[in-house]
Image 1 (cartoon, one colour):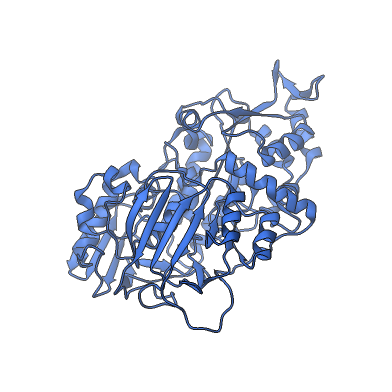
Image 2 (cartoon, rainbow, N blue to C red):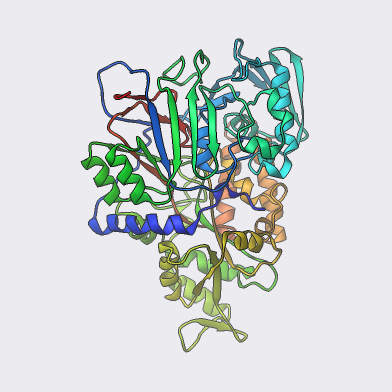
Length: 556
């Protein structure tokens, strides 16, 4: 199964982007900023009490166990149930203390030593000890493919050693420089030893205990979840403003399928936060502001929205010349301004520009349809009677699997590529069929849309490093010689310890991915959400996940 945190359902995307196109036509929009907090301005001290209601628009999975889940919505809740060894400052990207007060890394990034905070307990009463951390990491590793994110974060995991009750050493068989940032994620959040008495399926439904500021009262997959404040909580991340227990009494999350319903319930006061996966449209933003609410906006870090090719033998994109022509036939500026709005950031790399070690590759992503036409003509692809190019009796037709028709970006691609003689066809499939299609070697598709959220450049390994991610859609996205180069660069990035070395390695990687047509970047990703007028102190993590410990409500 592919790594599906990056999964973007076309149904959600289509409905949301249609609304965003209204914004483009209106000639206005929300500006992207690096803000990490929002809420109504107030000169009053925080008020304790009240229930925060959140509306999510997407249910990707039916699991809430942080070590297994991959959906951003579930991870928004997990971030408030489990704590991690470290945290990542959303303003600087720096790794800072949390459950670990300090740490050290050996010279080749194979051994990580953490000194633990004292006085921390899990919500079931068990204390945080070195033995508990060992049980948690060993348990995460044993999940194997069930931990679709953790399997890459823990690549080469050798084991965890208890040095003393408040000190652990986590070792890897090969260099793993990305691991320190991984300790700041929910996926490697520390869970109580009792958790591992239960099966992975039971843990998905709530049989786990963290040391976070909230506890789980109930969870009905795809319907709702209720979290309760944990009194006595006193060990938040070093960068959180509230150093004690949460101001809120509780949090109620509901899964609501349509943005229009989310916004309607926010405006009526039934919701405090409208938290969709894809940015709220201009029209919805105006409705929220008109009702006295506000809009929260922040760029996501990680992998941009992009296309990955199928270069299996016999597929059209196994030809590097066609891939180069395709790269030059995509008008990214038009995608940004038409599918989103005027002034929306134009994609400039395989990584979001807020990701550490991002490099601007705009010079490799220019729109040059004349050059594309020349490349194809010289490669033997002649224009047919219907305008679509042909070679050896075969038309230049590229298939993209979609779970919902009328995706605006696919529609734009169809128009842009047709101008150079390339036809794009949507292959409408169910979600289950899409999984099967992508898991099957040499699958019947040519391009697949993907993205991924993480505040580290090694995020690219999750969908591109064939030494770790061996699913068919990953391995057939690059030729064998290129795959070896890509894997070698990931290995070099994980082994990099000298200042600037890691940045240099990932700069080479980002350039190679575009030059060889391993990825075709489409658009940047922003989170744009609605905030009710009574909400104060909203903050998110570096990966855009909700931090509820600092939130308070004017009403209670």
